[in-house]
Length: 477
Ligand SMILES: [Zn+2]
Image 1 (cartoon, helix red, strand yellow):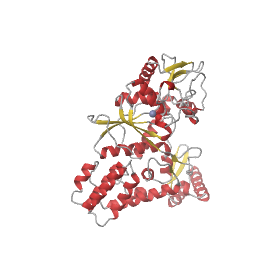
Image 2 (tube, rainbow, N blue to C red):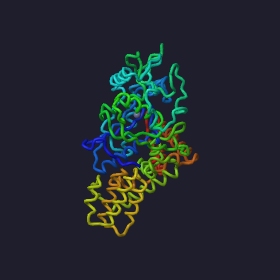
Image 3 (cartoon, rainbow, N blue to C red):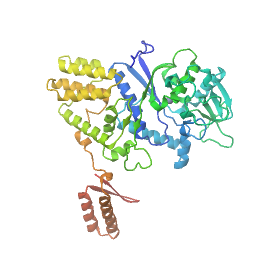
Image 4 (cartoon, rainbow, N blue to C red):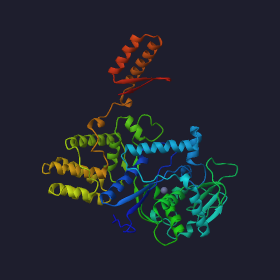
């Protein structure tokens, strides 16, 4: 744990950059953990009265399959697979990302820059590195020479030899060190890329690491305070962002003061309907009858630097906890608007018990974002007979300003777990499908009385049938 000291105390706004999604597929549950974590960090700064300007990039070009330096782009592969244009793919999966961001009650970032809009600046950035002697050219592109950076890899605490073995299995013809990475990925002869730009190193596309350095500096200034991402970025992507940025700036200062990484979500034990072959998405969770904020509560119930195991039992427990909290809070509504420690302190001045809970919450968020302790303090305060009702209102509002669980607006009914299709036995599903087929047949024979009778039967089973041009579809209410 470390104290936060802003780079320029006079600055009115603290800059924060979070590595964003590569928009070539639906984000799965694990992909969303970094944004819930970054949101918690933002809420912590707001709590302390420090304004944050938050930038999250959208990678719509330059990210090769398997994070390698050569080969096809993730987006181009997806476009070919789905028979859509790369731009369609990017727009579609960017929207899907924003849907999940909103469902998880994540405060929107101030900027979501698209990599494809910054390629000219990336070329200028790489050209300066070349002019300053940090690069070499190969037929496959322009490479950053990591031997020129004595501090290379400090973030990941790597040893000089044997470093990044796992991440660098790729063989690149002519690459001097395994750690050297592409700033520009030249088009292979005879293989024309879909998204391509002309550059001093030929037609091609930027390397994946370049965009974050370029876009963060463009939107937050050359140096800024906070950079976040998943722990998988600590070993490779962030190490390379730092190397190229500090070489570019050349002022001997650390590029970014604080790096924060969230741990992984283990999804191994989780199997959900419709996600066969892929990791479960937030939409799978809601389809299975859970509320998105139950997933948020599940994440905040662990510390961001701990691995979490996502299991059906864990998400059940999270949903039950959230339902209990929301039920208990109903009688306290409306809650006061409290976003900062100063606001909360002012409103509990006459309630020493509430003041103590506020101190506990403040100490917990300051202790490296200990969200499990805030949850515990909230639950204790709701049970405590010594606290005043107004004190309770303030504590709920204060805890929720940090946790973002929607306690001011959710209703217990939102958290009743609906029966999902995956809860039905095979026989039940078969019986419903037979009834739906019988109804279709009756309609074909214009036997409206029978069709209506079957619909009533389905209704009783909680099955809702919708007729579409492709035939009837059914779902549980
Ligand atoms: Zn990044």
